[in-house]
Length: 220
Length: 129
Image 1 (cartoon, one colour):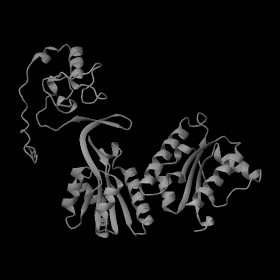
Image 2: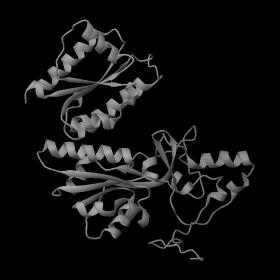
Image 3: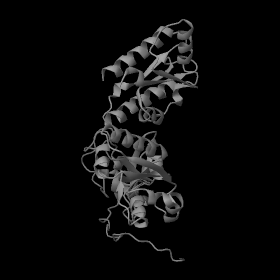
């Protein structure tokens, strides 16, 4: 799941300066789960924008909409339809892919991002999301007991742990964070696969994914 | 703007604060008339959006009135309400509205005097600004 965070209100207001009619568009998938751009957050941000502009004596008309998946053209078109014609600018509360999908569909309108898309992760508990995957294109998880050292080790080491592991299995860079390689060791120990720790792994080929990434299904 | 035009919205839990308001009425306790009492099944029903919308529609102060901590009929409704009020304060500060204009208050059904006092306090607060 893609995790994002909302930008500060001031930054969003600066982007929207000069526009009188805007449409705030949320996304019902990843960013709803991480409390960044779902229906509720669209309501909150729209309300804040109205309150802030009326406090400053400016007139701002804010429309609200939520697309089930903002990164799918059909869903965006189905949900937004004619609404876009009524506004001067669109504020997207989707991830970067959602913003760009809408920008491509509505080329004549400026699209602004209200979120900072931060990482691919999972909800650990209510209100806490952790990074799990760096989308490196060359998955390494078979050798590490299903724990990714590329993003969960602060140094991204493929042959860990480094000398900086603290007592209690914490990272030297942040004592709050677990050392990924301690987690890997414990997981492999449980599975009786500790021999994997003795292997040396060549540096990863980070050029597997040519940017911009593109995958084409063979059957298509 | 006169005080009469500055509205206070009081979201009152039916189990406690609403009864306290009712009791205040029966005891003929005087409190400012610019308050609008909204009966809700539990303080936990109030979302951040309800609070923001109240301000958007012109309220000058919002009170979320629930049961005493530990006495919520729905177990944690009042604790949730407290957290949401805290969140709403931050959201309001972000737009330049004094966070003190929204407040969480805990009641038991017989606290009629406290009900009147809280309304009075909020009315004074919004009058000052």
